[in-house]
Length: 168
Image (cartoon, rainbow, N blue to C red; front, side):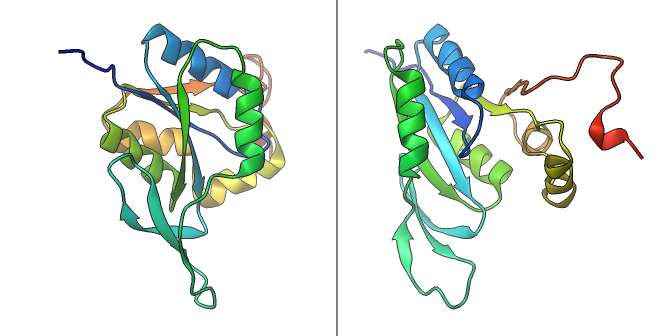
């Protein structure tokens, strides 16, 4: 019996630096695993989950009555295709809905992922405000489920440097 290694799940967002997907592809290649690139739309919620982790969702907006299979952003897919072109990894995408950490953790459980990979927050005031209101996806994942969480540093700030979110 041939066993398929469990996949690696990576959280992806539009405009995210390529470093996250590149690093995730290295992990997937090391484990000889599929790389599942998952994007989460927090303005929607899951209605039904399929066995592969894909889902149907609906908008939180009461005026939007449509129900749809969650669709992966074509621009983000093109970016991932460009980044992974020629790399020795099998990959796929999943469009998720809801709170990002919860959705990524749930997907990882559904597909029995070996790990979840996300990018760190960027050291800027805009990201500081966003994190204040919705929390850090990496921290919520690390404390909310049992799989290892790998955080890829984005624009790291050297030790000893004052961080923008710590300034008064």
